Image (cartoon, rainbow, N blue to C red; front, side, top):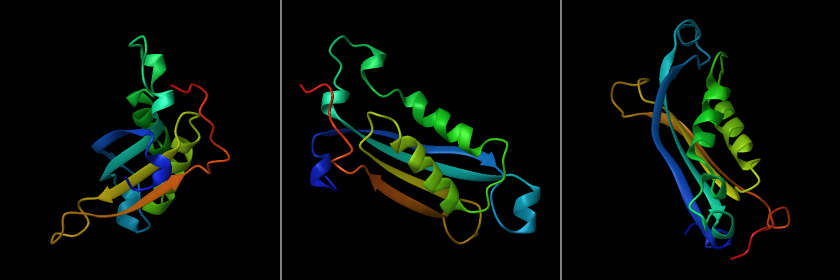
Length: 136
């Protein structure tokens, strides 16, 4: 575990979510969509994500991750990967059940001699701001 504060958490993830969007500062990047790939980890306390009745409302739905990404990257031009990465992390951390988030954004088609370029951010809520509401 990366941080002791997360040892009581379940990790939800979305791997290699790839789509085309307008992102970049150079003229060709502003004229044509390019492929980006996102990887997201959400850390949710077990006390807030351990189903008792096997119901979706007892956990964080994976749709939350995808919908947040789609809303942030659709129909707008973003200049920097850092801007998109930070914005996604902030939005996901606003979910009341999420204690920490890791977001990685990559451009796989920038250089022919490497797999991808990208940026990653990790954010954790301050423990004083986060309280488990459903202890096991």
